Image (cartoon, rainbow, N blue to C red):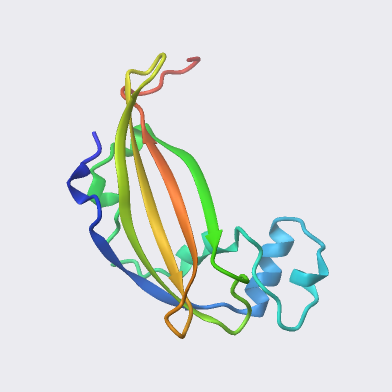
Length: 150
């Protein structure tokens, strides 16, 4: 089961540039034709674009999820939320991240036993150090493995 001893521990993040071409690629991948993302020479990111920022994370970066000791065979993605503290970042911005486990709690499931929830927050700061966005990821570890047909 998830280890709640890591609650509040801050994990170093990574820095990545917001590139115009990557905004356009993401817009096309999500099938938008909104000219604010596709044609604007200085576009802002789409609200969910930050999820792709993980591709810039170094392979050897300490992973808050791994610190939870979750059984990956029983892991479910429970939700993703983004909060922006002003206009979204735009092409040309340089963003730095920092993550931490904010909450770990349990709920009794109807069929799968006790479920353990963990919420991870990732903070995104621009090149001036200002927090421009946060994401909250909810992970669920089922109490027992799922079986085919259940």
